[in-house]
Image (cartoon, rainbow, N blue to C red; front, side, top):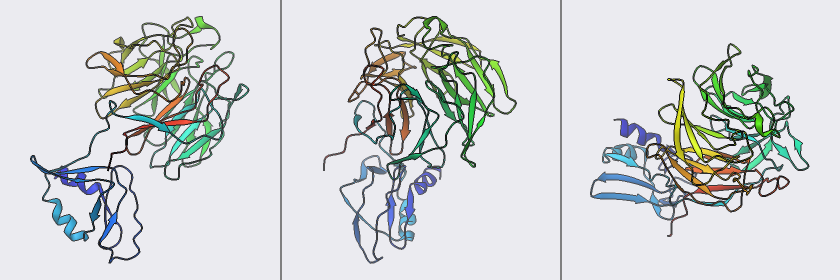
Length: 392
């Protein structure tokens, strides 16, 4: 019954006699009349498992016979389960993506709920100007539009989104770094002041927790002071407005990144530790026990990298960054916390650090903005990591 319910969720009907098999995003066919018998549907590859020895494969290039609603529902009982091919980081490649209106590095990025797109927040633009502006990316129309303006200009800030759709942005560079936060009410589309952090931070990471709380990790008091890096974390309760200390890390981590693992632990990646040198070790924060432990060691030390959790296999993709000798990196790495290993990932088309990475529909990953060489090469371009098209 669970498998049947999941399968029904993957089916959407348009008028009589039409069924669209979909994968995350529905492609709406244009039907001029219900008398049409066949239609080429541009859908991701879907596999329906009838038995261990037989599979019916529906491909984007194939013709799919249209069936009546009743016949489709009846036919569901024929299948034991629906199998959708998983995204494979070992086979995925980067291709050109959309371009923002402004070149931004050190920006925040969040996926908005209910298919509202992606919001890109603040950052630094050409000429070294810190931005309070935001841009909203519509994944359906592949276009950008201006978003609501924050109350403060923020470069090297961190952003996340809560379960109720509230966007939270924390910190950013200043002299000293900003301790303020802001919250975007999705209903009003307006930024409001949030609780202050206990410590001003730029180049930090932030992750959502339950009960309207967020975890803020690392960063520094001043981006240009290498010795002002922070090993502390703090938990901000957005309802009560209070901040409490979280588990301490083994070393300071400025310009780090972090992801939440499936078991609720947090993997903290890269950064610098009180010098301008990059870090290759990662560490794992156990919020329940209030402690940290060593995680996988990356093949390349890097700070200013972006990172994203891969739900298909529980691994983590680390993207770009800057190396120990100041080199801007186009390489990526795949971290396996279970096996405590790091391996080479797909390469970007250009070096990027201080960029942002977010998941997109159809099992794709968007990497956008950042610097592509020196601090003056700000980027508005993006790249999309996805599965290569199948040959017909």
